Length: 253
Image (cartoon, rainbow, N blue to C red; front, top):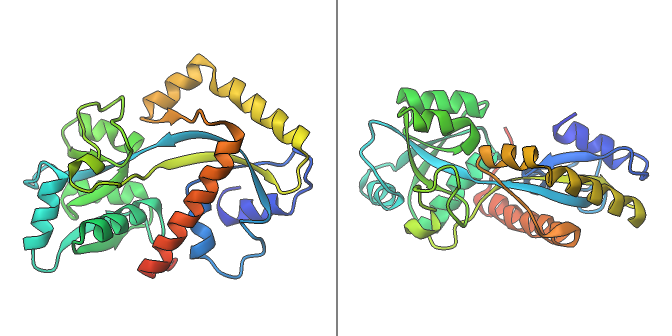
């Protein structure tokens, strides 16, 4: 099961390596977003291996006359009331992307939350809301089909499947870097021998040519840092997004 239900199940499972959790960026957001959970994100889980990193992409309705992130910032500064951005819902990564842009670029952005990325994407295509930090995989066909214009990716470097689309960091917002990511977790206290076996097995899977091709086709990249770097990555992401959630006063729906 996904979400906090699945996390609760794994947190209380026997630490023998037979019950594991495949989780995403929300794992680093939820500790600040939700209170009074039956488990502790920082104490009840042990990251095994960070599998992949996938950028989001800032897209705009095709009829909006902006070409770059700098254009968006300029438009926001001269538009009374600011610009409307869709998101997949309160506290989602798409929401946090716009909050980070609002803070780093010092512009006014109006958050329009939807109940899911598909609904938000449809309304951006339809022109009801102009801007959206879309999932790269789900928006790619619409970008290539001319229904959406791609302004910038949230990663530190260009995406291999859209190499001509710049990063937000190089488009006027230095230091901006956001990913969707996936990590395998085991219950805290799982023996090192078991953790190492799980990490090794996952690495074999990720090294398979068809898996590499699939991840690349989704606009992502495989993480090459290994288990120790994976632990640091999750810890850093939890601290980073926790501060964003608290500073912006973000609450769950």
